[in-house]
Amino acid sequence: MQRSVDYVRALTAQARSTRANRHLRFALAGVAGAMNAGGFLAVHQYTSHMTGIVSSAADNLALGAVDLVLDALGAILSFLLGAACTAILVNYGRRRSLASEYALPLLFEAMLLLAFGVLGARLSGVEGLFVPATVMLLCFTMGLQNALVTKLSHAEIRTTHMTGIVTDIGIELGKLVYWNADTTARPHVDANRTRLATLCILLGSFFGGGVAGALGFKTIGYVATVPLALLLCGMAIVPALDDLRARARRRR
Image (cartoon, rainbow, N blue to C red; front, side, top):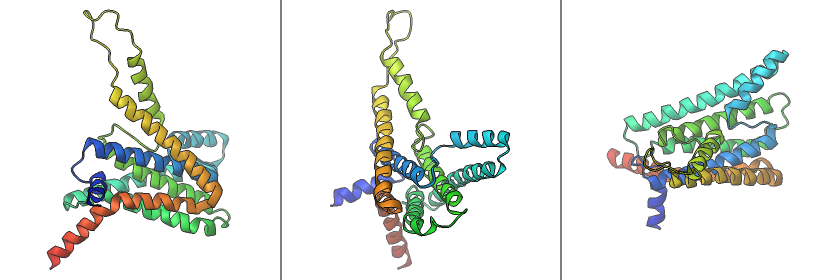
């Protein structure tokens, strides 16, 4: 039992390890894939990456569809605010030496997903409000999570969109199959096999999460986000409890 608690504590601990970073990225990539696919079934729009949303805003502006441009701008602003929220929470925890420095954004994300899962079915009947509000909520959540992983990996890895992941996989594959004909005159070209394996697992996690999210939403509807919220809460709850116990000891 204690080993399990220590493992969960290490996932979002201040002192980062390669193992903890790797496992947290895999889990969050799966969550992002599930949110993206399930969200698409809910509102018919992907919310995990801004490239398509920015492109659609440009297209709709050229076509004169001002209402769709405003929807896209709302989604972009929400993603940006989500990322800013993570920066605020992480720096708040860091300046106060909290054990939950990296756990706070995950707990906030879990609360948002839980609210969406519980209230989504009731609010889906509200004409003209549900779709843009849902898109903004999901974009905010994606920005929140993406910023957290960006800070953890020092801007090397993202989990909410796969463009950079697939690009890096292609680069490493190119290195892997490169034929080093002359090994004396030029530097030897070698692939980083560990990085390649990590990138492939991230891609697989996102895809697997997407399949699970789509099937879950198709089967049980908005409640499918509740297990995702519980997973995030489970990964972040131990450091938060550590902080609460430390605070209680200081008061005594």
